[in-house]
Image (tube, rainbow, N blue to C red; front, side):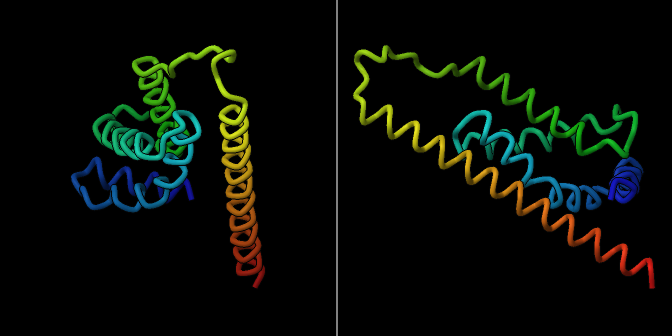
Length: 141
């Protein structure tokens, strides 16, 4: 897969702007999931995802190893999340003035979000596992 990324990046750097679309399609959901977990807001995560791809496109010429595009993109997204969190720290509230039901609701929401993220990760692992098995079978024939 990384070799295909490297080929697409080479085409982009040679002026083929359409070659960036497959990279966006490949990494968009993962980058959004990362941002959503870090900032806790679906819509802000969408904005961060767009910003990450824009920044990656603009700085693509600085990428030393084209094969490591995915990791590089996730670092960009993670740094954008940290920047956003620095500028928008969550409000602090004393637990003494917070209702128990609110604490329970937030705790449960975080639990469900974590469980959904874990299930999504497991589903992605299963898809990759099946794809690898299919590739191995195809190569064995």
